[in-house]
Length: 286
Image 1 (cartoon, rainbow, N blue to C red):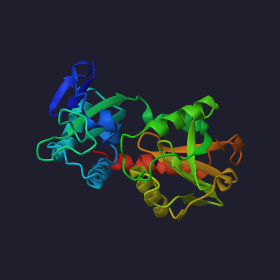
Image 2: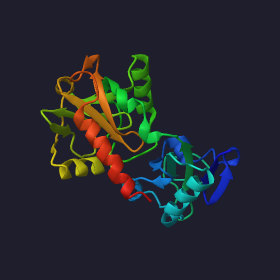
Image 3: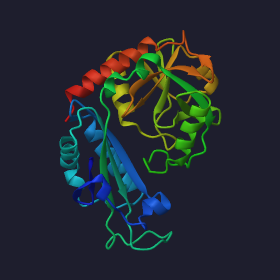
Image 4: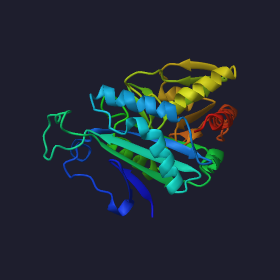
């Protein structure tokens, strides 16, 4: 049985409980991070911790008491659950003051809720999907305006995943004012003439930890990177595409709205970046 962490305690998952008045349950008032585990080690942990702190600050949410011990908690969950390859999910909520109210509870008397759990994903880095590539459906972006904060408000991205599944696709890219913002759970990129194009950082997209690492590695490898919005029509005419996320790393895109990119197989830029990212990230894993 899986061991999880709830507010200072390591518990069997069947014994884990939080209040029905927790604001994440009532208001989606919480943030989260997910860190990949490869070979029993955490990938890009420092980046995830930095982004978590930013999300908390942006929502005026108090840090959990165990914030400074999060690395130890992650490592312990990896150890007790015998995770070789997989994921560690962390969620911080504004907690509960024992009732429902739109007004934030008093920071001095209400402690945040801190929950962590693992998922075992054997062979995570050897995903067969990376050899096939993703088929993408374009959908309208109907999310709230602060997508740069990694909140637990995931209803519309979940709906987007289901729209894609219903259409026989693997995922969806969201479109706003004719331009691609990002995927349902990843950052989006196209490649045209060996130039990597991806939307610049703003409130419109999540500031991906994997995104930052991949773009750094791309520039170090002398690849041409342009950070700007691109249209869905531009994407369909691209030579290749890919997405990045903590759980998918670099994942090629081979089709958008039924139109093949290039020859319809994973392109050389996406393949090379996946290889570089995995190699370099393992060197700094903790």
